[in-house]
Length: 212
Image (tube, rainbow, N blue to C red; front, side):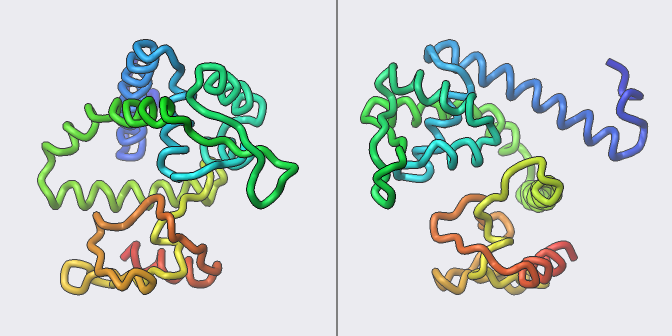
């Protein structure tokens, strides 16, 4: 495919490069999934449940994975049939069902989390400063996609009420007030279990500082 399809400017070349990465990711995800007797979607749900370390409702899973309710329900039902997840009444609402991993599901989730290793190896060849810049750029891109409604909001440091950004993280680290922890750019979390969403004004201020 000609690069001209996406334009000859930097935006087009970056877009083309990201699409090539997505092709590799899709190929690797399916290769792993077929070997595990699952689909990439089912593997993604297993990893999500492992990351959250607790039961999740179907609606939460659908929102976090950006899947439709029907697709989520079908995937979870298949995982339940395979004995990898189980449905139980939610502790906070006996009328609702929550999904959690079984022992076999936890094992499968750990394996599912390993297929992106090929990306980690490639990123690992970059110099430390390149990895830092790359991660900062990805965080900004994710933020823009969230603002557009293309992807669901993440429980990331940059939109958390506990986060205190630094104008110059190389000299003065960022800080998490809740954990009383100093943080470099690459320490910033994309999905934090103690996340509490900040108000809109605070988020705007944080992103303005981070974007400098």
